[in-house]
Structures are given as structure tokens and as C-alpha cells.
Amino acid sequence: MADRGALKFVGFIFATATLAVMLVAGMVVKGYADGGYTLDASTVEASR
Image (cartoon, rainbow, N blue to C red; front, side, top):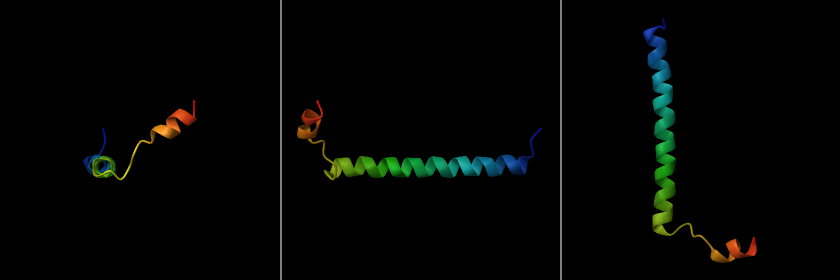
């Protein structure tokens, strides 16, 4: 059976990674909401 201290450490690592991913996702969504990123229709048509 695994040691409790090691499990707490692994849980902390996973929690930190999850928080980082959520933060980045939130920043991307905020960027789209503020209009910082736009989907340009001309580039989609040019690639066909």
C-alpha cells in the first residue's frame, strides 16, 4: 500500500496542474470574449 505522504504529494502535483490548465483556459475564453482573437473568414476560404 502507498505511503500517505507520497499520495498527498502526488495529489498536490495533480491539483497544481489542474489549476494551471483552468487558468490558461479562462484566459483564452476571456481573450475571445474581449475580441482579442477573431476568426477570420478569408483565411478559411483561402485554404480550400
